[in-house]
Every structure is written in C-alpha cells, then in structure tokens.
Length: 76
Image (tube, rainbow, N blue to C red):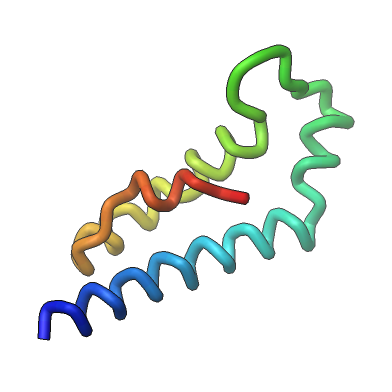
C-alpha cells in the first residue's frame, strides 16, 4: 500500500514540475530574464533560481502529500 502512495506522490510532484516548466517555456521567461539583464556569471542559472522561488507557494501542499521539495529543484 505504501508503494502505491509513494508512486502517486512522485507522479504529483512530476506533474507540478512539468506544469511549471511548461509555463516558463510558453511565456519565454528565460528570454525575459536575459533581456532584463539578469545573466548567469557563475553557479546556478537565473531561471533555476526563479523556478525555485516560484515553487515556494506550492511547497506546503507538497509537504501534505509527503514529498521532498529538493526533488522539485531538479529542473531540466
């Protein structure tokens, strides 16, 4: 039974991650950041930072289903 619940939780996290990634791609958020002068000098890319900030409001809901927010920070 736990395995099914874990699988469902993992699917929910992946579904949310895909929605957010699609949103960022559809609205060309990376290009907007670049045009705005927000560029990567070293370390993590600005779009990954923004995605991490963007996911924070959903973190409480994900905690309720038992997932770890670190999984969400592994954007493609």
